[in-house]
Image (cartoon, rainbow, N blue to C red):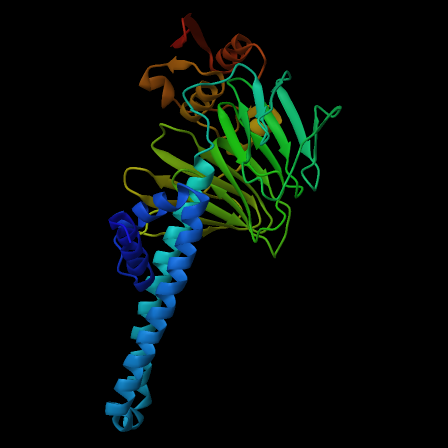
Length: 388
């Protein structure tokens, strides 16, 4: 056996026993992802290590029972209960490590297909699993995938046949540029609306798997089809969102200080990817979760959901929306930098109605200024706001 093989065998043994460090788990996960052969090798080594551990445990228990069996039976039930708690805690640690490795492997398998977020396409683009790239012309594109994942309808008229196979594990990627949105119906009927500068990585269909899983980079609104037997998971770089059937919005753009989710209906489980500081929260309708990438903390608050979801219908909600938040939404959608004095950003707002996300962003800047009694000047990619 080579030195490298011995090292991997040692990592697998430590993984099964629950003694592997986080770095060792990551190393093992990266090795598994390198090839199908490594995945099979891991499965074989894991089975062998588990059988050895089980055999050793049985031997230890036989020796223990032979020596202390009478005393064990004489112990009060409360003492035995404490012992069972300790044993359960040990099992929880091992299961936790196993879950961490599984999530790491699964997350990596999706993330590797993400397209460089610094390179934004000029048109909404659908990259199919068979290598076909399809540019979409409309500002608000629509894509529908049938239940088998064998055909795709684009803009309600164009049908594309795709070669699908259960052995084909490469996913599709939908990319949306600045100033546009896209509405995608997945094979299970789930509807995903992507905001500007976003991408979704998704499979042809969800057959032969025990869960439905996609990966989001940017912002997306999800209306998930209910399926109690197959939970729907949305992976972002730092968090995992799990639902059975619900409607929610996720904002997870690169280079932001936090990641947020707003729940419109149903329930939503939010988990961070940190193993040593694992956090879980379950959102109720009308709640928003914010995860700080600096503090590594999930916070929950009550919100007006329309402030965070109206973009999918082509407008931004003005009522009770702060000017500061409104400007951030416009900056994100049109890829501009808006500069204004702090006094203007903190100025009390009595705005009502809707701000339409026009094809021409100048119309949006002008409408905003008419509503707020401001002036704007353009300096390249910078919009400067000032009082009239």
